Length: 241
Image 1 (spheres, rainbow, N blue to C red):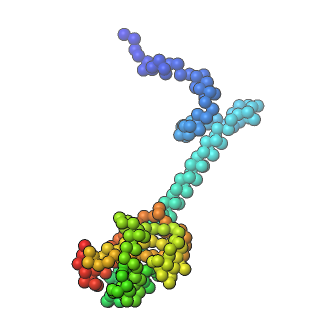
Image 2 (cartoon, rainbow, N blue to C red):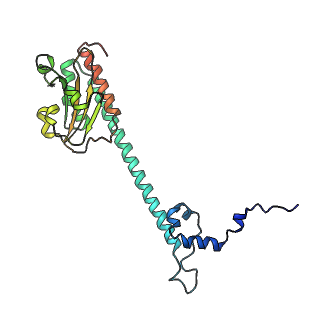
Image 3 (tube, helix red, strand yellow):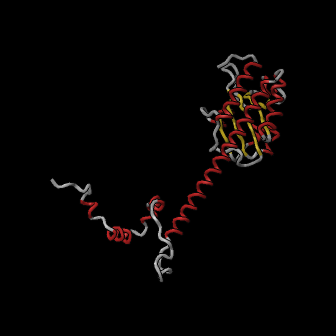
């Protein structure tokens, strides 16, 4: 019985000449398959005596490609490190904000912490606590709390939106009041304290136009909003839900 060579008929016909012919017919082959560049053994530029001007510098091409890959990896690495540091910084700011509001001695102190201390902790220009009101109930007379017309929160955020990040603000006075002139971008968080209480809104404003934008994560702000909801409910002795 004849021993098989282990080669298929297709492999038997694959010669240097067929490879060369294929590459000649497909000059962009390596551009479409750049991973092969790392597997090839490049020629030296001056291997062919007397033909140094006509020899393709594959080694230089491969080095250039690897340098480009390395630069891209470094850029991605730097972006990842920068993003991680920014996330850690934001996390630390929110944690310190939570500890600050939990230290409130009474309701007035709580409002003062939210509106005067949180801007410093969060490194923003203004933090406003807004509550929907018809003009005859508590929020309009509470120092540090801005009253909004009934339905204003839903008009700003939509019926089902918990948090809205805006990189350009054209109606800053609606939520930021006297501080509106400082606000170019803002973050708005719905505060549904209780079914027995009107809707409220946490408004964080910054003079930088792109400080807040739709591509950012909202988990940390959602956590802070949840803490404020519970604190408000306890200070006002309101049932949860």
